[in-house]
Image (cartoon, rainbow, N blue to C red; front, side, top):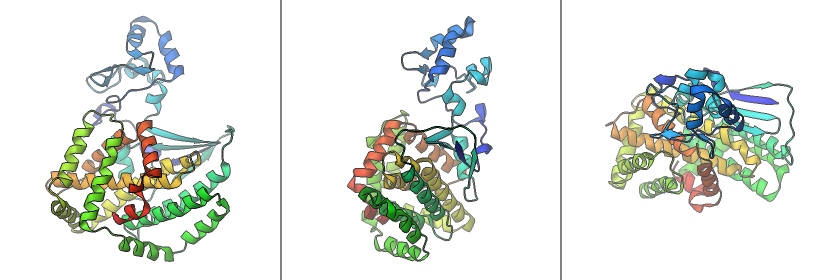
Amino acid sequence: MLYTIPHYYHKFHCVAGDCTDTCCAGWSIMIDDKSKKRYWRQKGEFGQRLKQSIDWKNSSFKQCGKRCAFLNRENLCDLYMEAGPDMLCKTCREYPRHTEEFEGIREISLSMSCEEAARIILGTKEPVTFLTKEDEKEEVYPEFNFLLFTKLTDARDLIISFLQDRRFISSHRMALVLGFAHDLQSRIRSGHMYEIDGLLSRYRNESLHSIAEKKLLGRKAQAESRFLKMKELFSIFQELEVLDADWPRYISTIKKLLFEKGIASYEENRSAFYQYLKENPEREEQWEIWCEQLLVYFVFTYFCGSVYDGQPYGKIKLAVVCTLLIQEMAQATFKMREGRLDFSEFVHLTHRFSREVEHSDLNLNALDRIFISDQRFGLSSLLSVL
């Protein structure tokens, strides 16, 4: 078994009561079967509390005011404090670690739905590298397409190299990976897997950077068109499950700040934001690094999962659109804060986005469907707003 992690992975340590948010509120905490059996066997007063605090039918902890029944006033876990870490269920032991499973391979990342994990990921200044170790476990997945998986891992390596090429701004890098994923998808759809190696070689050619730049400039949207397209991107949220009851109000505020006063106001704020970045080269460089780390995070986490549905282009659209939405949320925050945006604010809004979008299978499946079939998110449309 091969295990792969990003190099910052072991920097994470739960800050417990010092966390500005808590992972023990706002969503259901599911209990694995092994832990549920262990909880049922507990005796005494604490065992009685356990039995009363679990929704046995739905295999989750009950909530009180949208907080886990074991979360105390200091935002600490009574279950942990009473019985120790071994008594935690699998969800609580592993979060915010996220595992993607493939035959003989586990890829483990940190989830930005945890604010401390988001701080580590976005605060990483160097390009992310990935560490791999191996143990003696073996497994076989029936009908696992290892040939496709190999091609996808090669493609992801190339995509991440594009995203980490700091000679170019993030919009250029996004354009290049969208074009590559579009061409990769066409080979997979037509069954021409033998052409993928040639495609990889062609995209490694430096001249494609100038081609990508020309395509990007040629498809730049006019102010009115970009304004309308970005409003359209925000319409995605209307098709997703709401996890946090406050989320619709928050997104409504973001949309009002960005779009309510029309195109002129939107462009004025957009220009002011990028002027704010340019006034300080360090600030501008930091912004580009934040965008890079977002893109690499989404690509590492989700891209190779397309071995199960054959839709890598949809996964790249997911990475690009999520990054664009977070960028727009940052510009709204900049306006709300009267012309400033600091690291902690960017971490917080990214964490909120991730918590709402990534922690629902319904939402991730809906995004897969949207990016695979919805013509609003075609290549030309996305290139025009970069």
